Length: 512
Image (cartoon, rainbow, N blue to C red; front, top):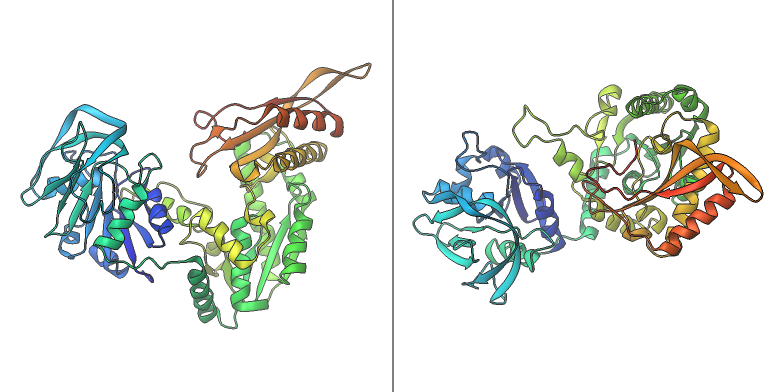
């Protein structure tokens, strides 16, 4: 751990990333490790404190996740959250039982002690509970420092052992002053100075890359999205023209995307850029393919093939730059040990194995909103920094069914109208994604005095924090009306527009 900070041991909570993010919002560095990380691995990070996350398990289950017990002998402050509190109680000889009344949702927390964890707090706050087990008896030496109606031990501590625990989830937005709980643990209890800033991170990261790469050459697969764009500019600042970016125009891009990439990176940032026109190759490879998974594989494999072809033309390349983010890294680490990886992310592995290049991942410690902050620090334009996520397979998975040049043009024009109209209303940054989908059906319509039989466009707009879950956006009727009228009037071949009101789950954000 290069900065003073805390290590979070992940016991399988859906909120673990939120814990890390809330701590960083207080200018304190944090890292996540699996719950069973060996003590040697934990020590490598030189933490000033340890946090046990929540998790779905019960401490009495035969395979209940438990940390390396030596973590309690480090002499570092420990904070247990939900399952983490129950684990601490069980470990030190207290009693945890299945609650007669499960406690889910909002609860009123009465604070009994304001010395450290709840310093400068009011007497009562509302917090978010989510647990089926509860503490019945505290271990010797522990005391309650907050209670709720159902939980006489909603927050506990053993000051001599430097251990604290909370039954609620301070990391979620529903817990009032939750971020302050985590900050108080880090600052008041662990003694961490809150001085982690994006400016410091940028200077340190560029110096680190400059030292490692030196005069050697690197390449970067540039998509025009915020992650690869920020990674490219950061590395170029560090090693100059020893970085070459490769942008593959697969014909599946949004309107004006290629031109924007060329203008931003070649003209504004003066980064060596190779643009490969591969539209016909991708269209030919996708000809007649309907299955969305096959589409994805064809596009991914062909991209790698073309990227390798171009990389071989650049002599003496030793490094590959990727825009891997912290959530990608976390999701590729098993919560249940090395045998059950949750997800292998496309940025964690892949091209380097095939190309025998050393990997540079300058963003692997950052969350998405931190990458946007870093992009602003680097001077990237808002159109890139605040760009909504766009799928790797591009418009191919927003055309339901077979892909052809005519349908791509129809969808590209309709999608541009959606983005343009949403931006006019000032809603673009509030939405996780907003885009058009071309459906594989035709409907009857009337345009002027003529009967038409044309294609259907679906509009998709969702609100989300991380893309894991999403709710359909309640767009203003006037906005939907403007989008509909413009698409019908300006996009030849479309006579009907519909709006998708499916949330995730049960649906997915993309249609394919």
